[in-house]
Length: 234
Image 1 (tube, one colour):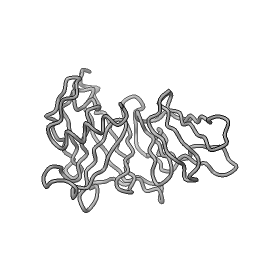
Image 2 (spheres, helix red, strand yellow; image 1 turned 45 degrees about the vertical axis):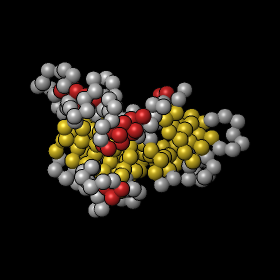
Image 3 (tube, one colour; image 1 turned 135 degrees about the horizontal axis):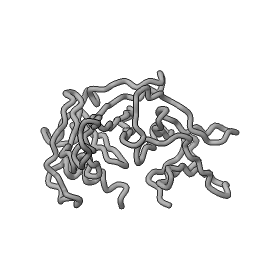
Image 4 (tube, rainbow, N blue to C red; image 1 turned 90 degrees about the vertical axis):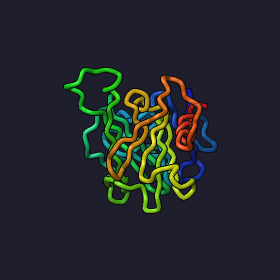
C-alpha cells in the first residue's frame, strides 16, 4: 500500500496519510495501537483529491468540498464544507484542489459533450476548465479570472500542484493567470493542450508532445511541469 500525501492534523499530533489504495485515509496519533482507516462515503473526483490546507485536510466528492474533522471525543469524519452546485461526471471529470498562496482553489477539468462526435483518442481528451475560489467562510465557490493581483501562475499535475509568483522568474518566461498542465495529463498528449489562460478562457498549445516518454525539458515551463509530474512518481 502506498501513500501520496501526508501531514499533521490541526492538533499538531495526529498523523494523516492519504492512501492510494481505494482512496482511504489513515489516521493515528502517539499511543495508538493501530491505524484508523477512513473511507469517504461518496466517490471522489480525481486521482489525488486530498490536499492539506491551513492545517486541515480537504477533498472533493460529488457532493462538494469536504473537510476532515477530528473533534475531541468524536470519531474522525468528513463533513461538507462547500457545495459544488454544478453537474459533474464521476467517470469523466476531475477536480483539483490548489493552494494558491494561502487561497484555496478548485479547478474543474470537464470533458466536452461528445455525443455527436465518434469517440477516439483525440475527442476523449477534449476538456474545458472551470476555476473557482473556495470560500470556506460562506460555503460557496466563486468563479475566477485571475490568480492574484501581483501575478501568479499554477503548474498543475494529476497528483500535485504548485502555485508560483512571476516575480521569482525572469520576465516573459511565465504568463500570469495561467494554469500549465503537467506531462501526466492526457490532453497534453492527445489534444496538444499545454495551458489554460484564465483571463481569456483560451487554451495554450503544447509543443512538448512526448508520445509516452517524457522528453528532456528545454524551457523553464518544461522543467516545472516535469518536476510537478515526478513528485509522486519517485
